[in-house]
Amino acid sequence: MLSLLSVTAYAAAAVAQERLAGSGHRGRSRWAAALLLTAVGAGLHVVALNFGTVAVVQALGTLTLLFALPIEVVRYRTRISAASWRDAAATVAGLALILSLSVAPETPALLPEPVVRRLGLITAGAVFVCALAARRAGPRSRAVLLATGAGTAFGISSVLSKAVLTSFTTGGLGAVSVSAATLVAAFAVCGYLLGQLSYRGVGLAAPLATVSVTNPLVAAVAGVVLFGEGVRFGAAGFVTVAVAALVMSWGVVGLARRSATSSTAGAEAAGRSGR
Image (cartoon, rainbow, N blue to C red; front, side):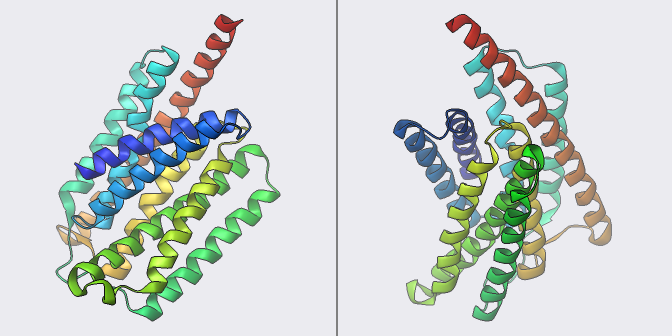
């Protein structure tokens, strides 16, 4: 429930960010709305991490586009096409498989200080490479690269958030790593800024789809490597989860593409009616 509430806030924030980018990042009220919705989504997301595996909570984040679609429909008075319903079904089916096969580790999700620092350096390096490559890329490639950096930052921020929450619940405030808490904030802010920049000039589709796929993928891999999270039925389970992730990604990309098409058509119609 916490994850679903978080996704609802993030979906509304994504639409607000797209409108903010479309206005040239002007308007205090638009900035305030986007920041407030993002903060609410992030808060609910962090609390949800304390009750489930990183893979499950992050995978639920892919529902952002599923929630953003009806918001766009209400905003632009467009219809949800049969193809969009198909993409939504693929997203939900892939997510359901991941949820049903995911298994929480028996040991607490704690990270030693050296691991926290190495993870921070690796993540910062990956995000920096994406941002640097985006400077020389075309508009669409630039958006995808920035969104990839944002998704990576968000994914690792969630992993570190779970470690911080576990430290707090098992050992109190004194057990919390200052480095981990600092990196959580730094990567969350970095992800937000890169995500906002990725919307400029290309709309909602490519950036949101890229973040929605990169974020859970990075977090799930980190959860397996760092926390020992796994799936049922051994190797067969991992293969099934990999196929489910591909199906879910296909649905997310399709939803993003159709959402962009409907929002563009709706914006043009709104502009004509305004004139």
